[in-house]
Length: 493
View (cartoon, rainbow, N blue to C red):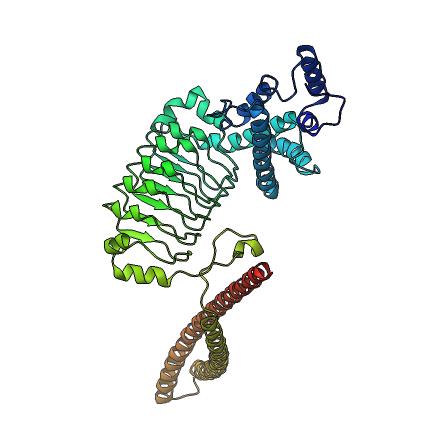
């Protein structure tokens, strides 16, 4: 039996997770029954509380030889895992807290701020972890609930700033029939860190899309989604696809680009309906030869990985041209993406060769200079033409007006003879026509001036867009150089 009066590391690690009241009760219990603090009987209630937070926590003893303190060891490891996930979720929510408008969510945000400001998120008590869980569940449930339509077979919850799909939504009796019939789940463009294990209850699920998130692992229950046809997990932080993915026999399309995947599961050979795989921009070092057994496989995109060779069976299936293109596209990826510097959406740019990039910049600069001079010259010509036309039209209009006025006065006073009267009448008519034509010409000049101004504005906008493109290229080059330097600094002894 452990002496509670000694400064034992095991004792301190256990009571560090508990409040003073619970710790005191635990001390009395252990002394009364003469058992240690690491006993499975003592730790099991706390492990059960962890399972209430995350259903992935197992309360079953490990297979094989059972350690007397297995419950304590599992509690410590699972507590650290959940606390780490909570810390990342809280950070993601507080970064976009200004975008939440509902008052009930703002109250929970105040609570999350107190957690975020703590010295060490991993050194917290179990009761604090439970309060974090309830706050995160409430915020995400409040965001998702309005999107659940019981008469629909789709769930569209993209761009809601959610960090999880609460398990309470799957266990709610009101939604049981809904989850059984849902066919499409679209939860992309969020801050998801995990997927719920209850996704396996969606037996009719055909399309699961969650690109642009922070998911690292798949739920083991995914193997129960036997109707799954399309899986898109691109732009996440996944380092491995589940081996039981091969149980999804109806799978036709798999998109997992821009992750940290090092290998594809061998079990994919059982997905005979699989037609397309996109696993570009990962860390693949080899492809499983079993992929050649996928009879329906027509497209396999695996560029920008670390492949050094490809099994001959796959080459025979997809062709030599595909092999040459795939091996040509293999190159070292930068250790830092554009997102790391700009904090924008995680869309890594397709960087070009450095020499070609410089040549494109020079060419773009020259084109922009020529285009700017051409725009300035055309603008000056248009302004000069309009000014000259206005001056000439004003002179003609004034002259015709004077002639018309003189003719009218002569005819009225009766000074002119009959032939002269006729001549003056004709002159008046012609002057009126000239004046009308001049007014119409002025209108046309106004329209031409407006058109010139619009075209000039469009040209300026195109120039700005071109400059933005140049800036993006220069930024991409900067990211590449930064990544290379960083890699070299880590490689140097």
